[in-house]
Image (cartoon, rainbow, N blue to C red; front, top):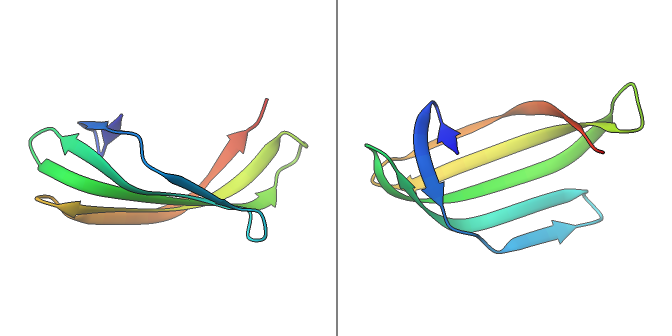
Length: 82
C-alpha cells in the first residue's frame, strides 16, 4: 500500500460492519510508514450512491493516522463490484 506515494505496511485490523448505515470501519491497524514512522490507522467507508450500472457504487471514505506521523483525509471514489 502507498499513502501519498509513500510505502506503508499495515497489519490487519478489526472490522465493524453496520447494515443500517451501509458502512465499514477498520480501527487501530498498526502501520509502519516508510520514512514517517509507526502509526495507527482508522478507515471508515460508507456506500453512498449507485452508479450508472448495478455493479458501480459510490463510496465516501475517511482515513486517519495517529502516531509519529499524523494525517487524515476524506473524499469519494467509485467502486466496481464484480
